[in-house]
Length: 288
Image: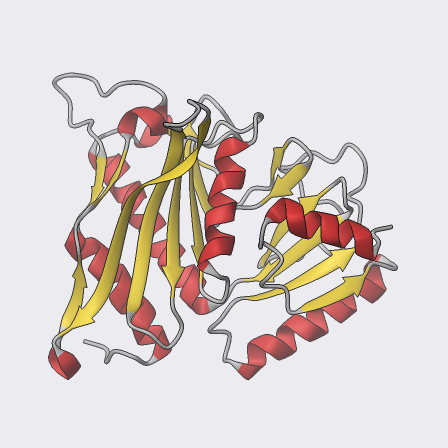
């Protein structure tokens, strides 16, 4: 059973990833805990019309032993629509109910990526693992979307993580988690930070880089693109530049010569379109 000291240890280990937790529940039994979680999260979601994310902490929780990460077990805590982040050492489960803003941004970027891969005639080679629960050493995590070579089922190389209610620091730490764990094959993490009540989105691409002072590889942001609204009521979303995803990192091979294979580019216009749809959900921008 997790204690207050283990939660403090987890807090230090996660460096802020627990900052977004709205409530803490002690795990007692599947039925009792499931009801408490459902009641809290549904009430929180109803208050804001399911716009924002809501996160709770469950202490003293253990997955059934030897449960494959890609299988939903007969446990009421495995509720569809919940994102799970589980720390085995602490028996701590972080449960997030994703809001409409979160889903809108991640889903639209994922749909664009799939279209671009198909246009390169590589769709048969891509594995779309989505939100499958993945093991990272002593941690189990669900992304908002994931892709990788079809030959590596459940081992994606590219992850997307979006956040609305969560802090930027929390989102950045998730990128570090995906890239720096030794059992992970992830080589690119796309982050999308949504600011509630503000017409601003920040897209990022995180990769592993050797640090100049010691040569040690650590996760670092390679690209960052801000999208803002310009022009008042009749304006438009404007992105600073495009966003690039490495073909070689995604497929773990170089593009073939004489084909349409190349790095995946999300244009400034496409990033602006994603932002517009998010802001429409917030009521900050009129529908076209």
